[in-house]
Image 1 (spheres, rainbow, N blue to C red):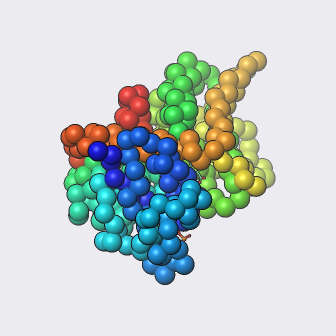
Image 2: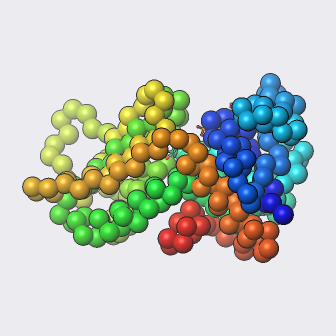
Length: 271
Ligand SMILES: NC(=O)C1=CN([C@@H]2O[C@H](COP(=O)(O)OP(=O)(O)OC[C@H]3O[C@@H](n4cnc5c(N)ncnc54)[C@H](OP(=O)(O)O)[C@@H]3O)[C@@H](O)[C@H]2O)C=CC1
Ligand SMILES: O=C(O)C1=N[C@H](C(=O)O)C[C@H](O)C1
């Protein structure tokens, strides 16, 4: 029997991509599509809204009206805080792709991992999670002798910066080098900045057009430079990863994963 998935933020870019990924899956299916109360999409056919053809699932405005095993939530920080609390209260595992949390919101979300299995990742694509592993090696081999800079580019509608993925990349590098990202991160430069300090990790953000998501981490040493880069050309790369995580949390419906905080590296066996 297929894993039954609810999607919150169904009308958003990722909501629609997730619907497509579920249609392509043999092991999971869309069972509920949820949008904000008052949305003009309430009552519409979810398949039609996602451009996938009629599927008979009417869009609802609350998780209380949804029938599902596991939730996939790519919305906005406060909505994710609320949706994860709902899942914890009702015993549903949850996959979270939302980025841009402040530290209090992130703590609130993670509290729920005491009650249900929760998979939180700034990026669900296989390629980015492979890059996280490559970054550990690069940081170990070159990190002490190189200046490290992270550049990311996204579409003009993105509301948080730097991207969650760029921050995760910074965390991987900083942790490998025994540095505290909060202390060494430099978010953009302007004016008389002075010479670069070796231990810092710089972030630069580009926003524009329809860029799906591009990340590059540079290790700039004397006489050579290594770049580890990832370019997403379709949101399906994130959506298929999130569906894989949902199936993994449900243990294919045989044995639901124990409550806890997981990420996509756990799903891919990279941790
Ligand atoms: N981890 C990963 O792999 C990826 C993560 N993301 C992240 O996912 C999130 C969503 O991205 P994207 O789909 O592009 O964004 P969109 O703005 O296209 O979609 C977000 C959706 O969430 C809904 N939403 C927001 N706040 C609320 C709320 N309080 N209550 C109910 N619904 C709400 C919006 O509804 P409405 O339109 O009515 O406001 C909208 O439908 C972002 O944080 C982004 O960074 C994106 C891609 C990959
Ligand atoms: O908002 C997006 O679009 C994306 N957000 C995620 C992030 O902040 O890292 C992942 C991906 O790059 C697309």
